[in-house]
Length: 334
Picture 1 (cartoon, rainbow, N blue to C red):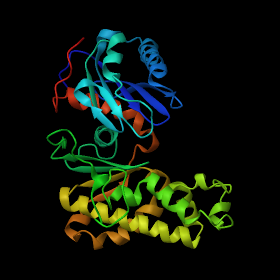
Picture 2 (cartoon, rainbow, N blue to C red):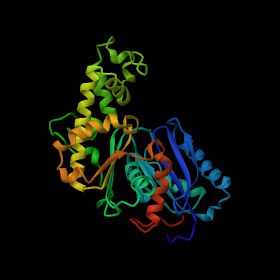
Picture 3 (cartoon, rainbow, N blue to C red):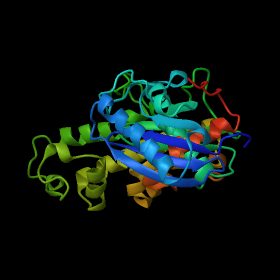
């Protein structure tokens, strides 16, 4: 990597926390920490983020001039070249200038991308997908995001919006998705929609076995993707039926991804990390219904190796990838 500075700062913005990482330009993570922001307003969180970056540098005796770039990732709608998070479903932040505000205290270039693209870059640079030319990553969270490495390059598309795999339409007459289309993969398998479906099915059934699960405690609002998995593993018929449907639809979406991109590896993150083989085994059983054997057999379908720590690598991965000469040029120093 031909950059004069020696380190990068990674910033991964999540629903309740921000992962902040210091890495060198060879890809070694030197220090990392997390800010629990509790969905506080942006103007309260940014000073803490700025102070955390300064503290990481101080702890490792790194000077500001040694930082080559920030890598910033977040879910939602972004204006990456401006460093602006326009909106996200998990935070009440609107049009916040994260990149420019970070530059006020540490004036170096920034790169920004969505969390799913950052996830596939993290797995490609640090995880099991290292060295592969064709990789697909699906994050199974509140919604479903996707990131694609094709021919050794992050697939960005004309406007940087390629890889929105959660909004592949599986059934045009299916359930309404948050994007206002019907039958998206996310509408069937995204955590928010799975929770809503489960809650609706049990709304008037307070004595149902699902309501007695330890993590539910009789409260409808506690029913979610993870409690569905728990219920299915316990053999509760309603949960088994819904889990089977989620796995079928995931197999359908994955089959489309295999046919479109012919990847060497497809990685499932976030909720899939908890589910493990209980999810993968059912997907593999259903997959031949949706993709040719020639696409399935060469593809290693597995749980993302970085697991719940992927946020510690994601922001740094964006910076390292862009600094290596891929994609957009960084912003100039302010």
